[in-house]
Each structure stands twice: as C-alpha cells, then as structure tokens.
Image (tube, helix red, strand yellow):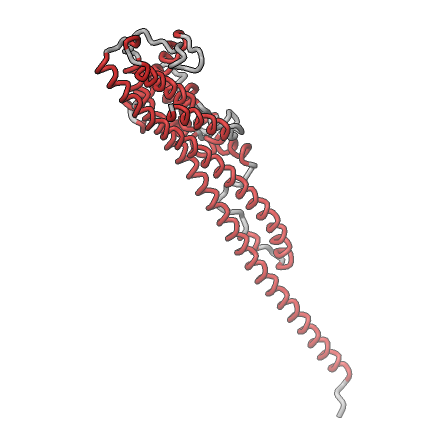
Length: 339
C-alpha cells in the first residue's frame, strides 16, 4: 500500500536536513582541526625564531661584557706597565732616521703619555672597586664604546654612573638589557628602533583565536595571523643577523686587542731590562735598544687606538668602517713585529 505523500516529503526533508547538518558538522570539525594545527605550527615557528634571537642577543651582550673586562685588564696591566717604565726614561728622542720613519715631536709623546696615564688611573679605580661595581650594563658599554668616551668622568663613582648612563642612552645596549625605561634609558623602545621594531612578547596571541565563535571565522583569522607571524619571524631573523654581525665584529676587536697586548707585554719586558742594565738616559742606548723603546711607544699608540675604537654609534648601530680599522691596526702590528 503506497505511503501517504506528506509523510514521504517530511521524511525526505528530515533526511536532507540531517545530511546538511552532517556536512556542516564535518566542515566545522575540519575547520577546527585545521585551525588548531595551523595555530600550533605558527606558535612553534615563532617560538623557535624568538629563542634563536634571544640566544644571539645574550651572546652579543656577553661578548661586549667580555671585551669591556679585557679593556680594563689591559689598561690596568700592560698599559700601566708601559707608562710606569716609559716615564722613567729621560731625553727620549724619536727623530733619528734609525728610530722612526716619521717625525714625532716630544710634545706629542708627552701628551700621549698623559692621556694614557689618565685612562690607566681610571681603569685602576674601577678594578679596585671591583668589576661587579659597574652595574646597569656599564661593562657592556665599556666594550661597545671607546675608552676615551667611557673615561670622561672625573671620579670612580661618577665613572660607574657614566658607564651605566651610556648603556641606557645607547639604543642597542639598552635593548640588550643595559638601560631600562625605569632607569631613564631607552629600554626596549630604543632597541626596537634599531632592530626593526620586532615583537618582544614571548609568543604572539595565537591560541586565543581558537575560541572564536565561528569555526569558519576562526580559520580565516588564523590565516590572517599566519601572515602576521611570518612578518614577525622575519623581523626576528633580521634582528638575530644584526646581533650576529655585532658579536663577530666585537670578537675580532677583542682578538686584535689580545694579540696586541701579548706583543706589548713582551716589548715592555725588553724595555724594563734595558732600564735595569743601561739606566734611564735614552742617549746612552744603542740603536737596537732605542728601536725597542720606539717599538714600545708605537705598540702603546696602537693599543690606545684599538681601545678607543667605538663599535656602536650613538644610535646603537654597528659602525660601517670597523673592518678596515681592524685591517689597518693589524698591518701596524705586523710592521712592528718585523722591525
């Protein structure tokens, strides 16, 4: 017996509704699954990039601090020994062709010794107070900025404050942790100007999108978030590359300072032997002995130039000509070795 027409229509409609509901439910499930997978992928990608950036940032800060410590040790060590011995010698004259290839006025030598002696005294004051006394990124500032700038203060207490102040005012140093906004520095805001405005939150708010009302809307928003995350990841990569360049250049300067330090120590010892054996009158020295004294002077000048070389400018950017400076100083050291 044929079924009534209306029940058939109702049954068909119910089946169609069930099919539509099933399709929507499946689409919703797929959207939710895709949204979660995309969210997890983006969050993982961002965190990896951020972790790499943090590693580079910490390495840069550590390298600056190591170089700053080395500068202080050189000034309080090899350069102090040079000044103490060189000042004893009387009637120093580097105008002989056998001693120098260019004219060096006695007043120039006196000014150089006076300048270096001031830096030696400042370094000695800091070392006496203790490296730990240089707070707020001061040690990193010592590594990043030339010694002449960092030793511009008049007393130990002022010096430590000045070093910390440099860290707070230099965008990259502040960004590395040397100067917080509370301390009056540029802090993160200053650093982002230099490093491309990177996001500094540990992770972007990716997971919150999962709880939006519409699964289709969630998926669309997550794809929009994907573009945002990719942009931030690229900024982090660029910033990490900047940090890596700064670190590599600083390590090159550090290695140059160390090699010059060793050569200076060797020559200062030779100068000390000459003083012990021949006295303090430069005119009584043999040509070979005068050359040793002159080499000490040239090495000390080279060391002064290395220690005074600034790695970051006032805006916190890596100075562009540092590789040529390193090459030039290496050539000077090589010529002294061969002399």
